[in-house]
Image (cartoon, rainbow, N blue to C red; front, side, top):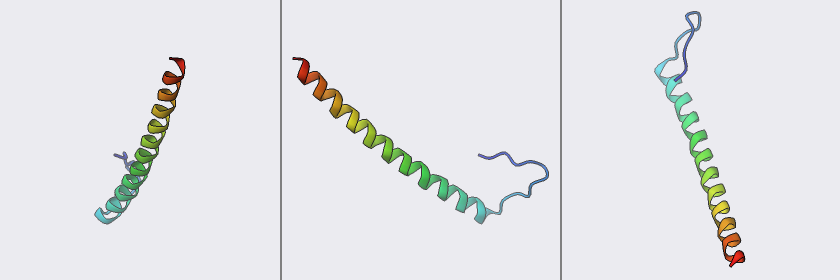
Length: 53
């Protein structure tokens, strides 16, 4: 959560909802990108293990 300073106005519930949805979407896309990267690394590692034998 963001810390609000004493001189900044607080968010309205609608603004907070909009901000949280945007953050949620960003985190979801980041999670999908990380999953894809992990999958690629696992495939690469599997190839390296099979080549050594």
